[in-house]
Image 1 (cartoon, one colour):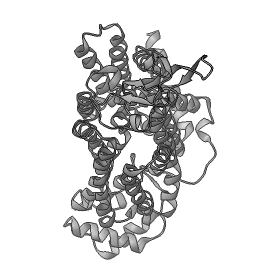
Image 2 (image 1 turned 180 degrees about the horizontal axis):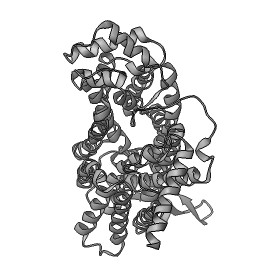
Image 3 (image 1 turned 30 degrees about the horizontal axis):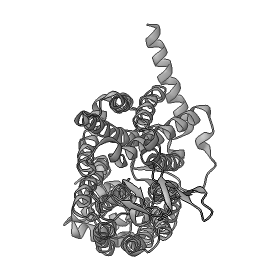
Length: 514
């Protein structure tokens, strides 16, 4: 048996079995549910054809069915806004759009339904702080229990203002603590594989939602159907333990010992002697771990060192911009079914299907060809495909769908690579700050996308393709500035990054001179 010297060795000894699988399944289940909730805008608040229903004294209705011309008591003509509409129910029987009349001057509220959820999800920075201070499981319970209640209760809300309020609360309670918990109980040599596999349920959730949207055309019943399964998370919460790594770091060694012993018992593994086990646990009194890299990092409040030197500022701004572009394009393609395809149900299912190779193929590709080049190629192919849809005739919808799906595949892969690239570029001492900047940037792109596909596309149908295509191509030029990280040790300090940057650029300059 290999000598167990630290907690990571202990996790390797315990192995990956039923105990770890419980955390992986819980997190995968959450990704599945979040995909559906994040995409609920597509079938619950879709763009619909509508016709103004003017009063009896109206003489004409505007072309956009937003105003009508009426006759006053004195016989004068006056233009008035429409207040009632007849909605097309050939595709959807009842939606937020039709029930709460989200058209004309209220059309922006359709996009707001999605964006308010994304915008308030930045509060997961707060939940991350609380998880570091009070424990991972505590935060999971405090957020996921009310989430289950809110998801289901939204099916019965009488006003759209209440719907928006509930969506805001849902976004505020959404956080990645469960992912962190799952990574902390995973063997260090399996984290990249497990991380990718736990993301696949997002693609599955996208496909399932396409099928449910086809079967259930009433928004209240659809929301109820996609929310009730969330209650299964309560079973996972009851069964899994607190993170033993967090317990050790915060000095709760006895509780950590009991969790480790339970893990070994469930995985049917023999632990070392009690004395050796206590010695290993005693050693683990280092700062909090970064779940993805397995490195130890400090979690206290620090100065904004992520902007302390020109190089780290440049890296941070470029990565933040790339996150905005990635989520802008990814979300835009997710919610842009009405722009790119005549069938929103097939479009959704195919979009989810394209994410699977995007996620799974990225790991072997970057292991062979590095991070930078595959990322640039992904953005270039995505941008070229989407931009080319502008010049394709409308009667060739199959070609438009093919190119958009190829763009969806490549932007999905770009996202997975970007996460790895960021973790390897940003030094350990500012990596948490970097993740915070990335989260806010990603939320910004996700907030903007539905306004482009649901509002601007009405006036300029070509605009979404141009914006998504041009921004993807722009990301290629930004990434060309950054150094390759494959085969390089993770930078621990900002000074380490400065050295890596200068060494890479000096090497490039020498190659050019030769």
